[in-house]
Image 1 (cartoon, one colour):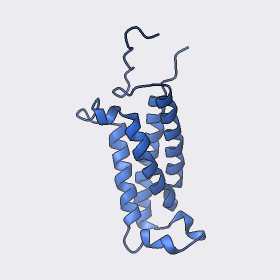
Image 2: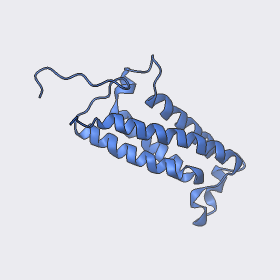
Image 3: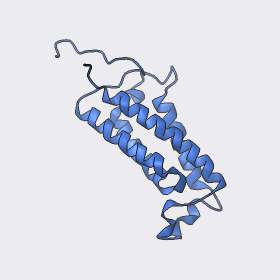
Length: 141
């Protein structure tokens, strides 16, 4: 049997979460709601009258899609190959998605994706271009 390439798996999970986050932010423009409004009404200013949280979610979702499904000039760049950068940026996406009522599922998918990316980072995996196998280091088994 083959070996599981965890960063590819995490890439697909985060790509799904990013698409879901974009869809949730667009829905949030029509039906603005904070997920935590049953506890406090203080956060309602983030979604109405100015849709700040929806815009943040839209931008973070587009960044996630662009990062995980890269164009030719992004693929293979240092920014694209960095798992560490993903482990820094995606928690911000998690926070934004979990605050918006429509984005809670995207936030949960992001959490799973970040855990898998951390697992891949802990195992020493490297990110290569999408749908390619990483090159073996000479002398390694």
